Length: 514
Ligand code: BG6
Image (cartoon, rainbow, N blue to C red; front, top):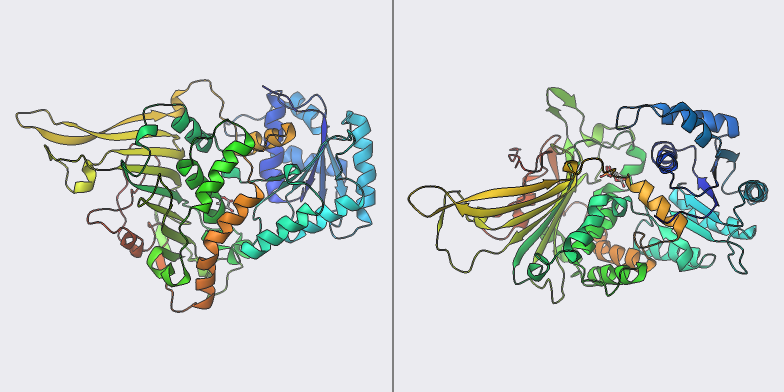
């Protein structure tokens, strides 16, 4: 596996939650697996007044809490890793502070022989992204000409708040960094199972000939979360499910399911193809929003015997909030492959379980020779379920003869679980993405044109909600249920419905009545 060159990694927002819970643990995991370059300095930057020692102590505490395997890290390995961490307090708005930052980076460069390779990770508040980029440039910390080493910028989500702000942010960043220096992160693209969509489709011959409007009846994607907003009311109030999950994570899954095979496997070829999908999304006009989009918000309920507050009771949320915690959208991709195939995508907080999956439902056989022992015509369609998390895997539902005198059919399932791959380590999304950025591979990062195309698609939905706040309904749904009943109404054929998944891939959950 390619090893990254020596570099200085500068994390803006290093005293925040993301750095402590995702980024530093991901770097530690890469370090343990000897996947980092020989020399790496990780420079945390933030407003909180810390020094190298107190930052190291804070990160050590976080890393010392047992990982997923239940084991605490080896003390010696941890100690060696901790020595790679440094800290510089900085007011991101103060231009003067960047000259101190420049000095610190230069000294770390000498120490690690980074030869001018700098990777900046913007985990700071989004309204600071452009300011940080400009201030880095004021210290000449952005140039990579004349063999000065690479200078790359990883930009966290949310990338923009709407179409105009995303375009504006792209313009601002481009005044300082070239597009090939900018890595817009979407952690869903770092998930193994999302990447597997490409291998599953383009590494097998079985499904690709069927992967089109002639054989597929509909595509369904669900990203359900059982948790609420986890104390992030301040962030979530101005965001909602459309911006938080749909515009980025879920449209990327649509891109992977919908794209044409790239001519070669490289960053531009793959991203050209996903862009074409985003550009082929049939616009939903403001007048059509009620017909194609259902929004909901969770209300108080007792879940598993425990009382759960409604969204409006959460800290940092107003008592008349209109922010959607649930979203279901039906849309079409107007191109040769997908013409007429409806895509149904839903996401929500405080649903019955945490599960993300894509379901491909194939068309009926042209003639019905056998009777199904199942009820409901939909059961007779073949289905392919691609489970992204948890119980990662793939399930195929097909019909077989029910043993006995007559030719009756029964739908059965074949399933593969990633957990069956013994001794295979599945990296966390941030591990893969950080490593890619250090190596300079942007295949799993979002390009400027794609981010704008996704915002262009969701903009009329945002506009309709802003312009008709009372006419377009926001449905309540009790915490712990599958969202508003109206989300069924998106299906236009008799007998069709969402799949109600359980944590276990092979089980179908029951629909919880509201
Ligand atoms: C984040 C959203 O981007 O993704 C969160 O801001 C959401 O609201 C999270 O909970 C879901 O990610 P995952 O990896 O847990 O599915």
